[in-house]
Image (cartoon, rainbow, N blue to C red):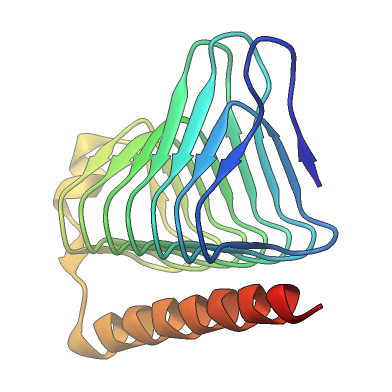
Length: 181
């Protein structure tokens, strides 16, 4: 469901993007091309002065929540994956080619390009440099915690790329199916 609010102009959705049945996109939201927003995902920028931008080839998987508080912005840059049940809460910037795992939460933070936040981790009020791994279940809420993060290992980089590829293919397949009907 796409829902606009007076004064926001409503959501904008790019070419080849699929907003699945049961997903909700509300307010001042701009979604690029070849994005897959899965069932039960919520993308909500309905508070005064809030905005969400999800760039091309991203995916917002089942049950994920992206929300921008009043006067804040959430940016999800090109090629990033927001896995099942994660929460990305603004103000927040998710860099290009990032991955946020199942039930992970990112709030008031910036993730550098290629960073991965694994399942169940909590990232609060920090800036994570490019290419860093937040381990499953970790709490990263201080500069000291950020400094201890290791680089993303090659096998997880490949995992991240495969998730992106799969979801771009899903967006394309669903978009083609909608054109046939």
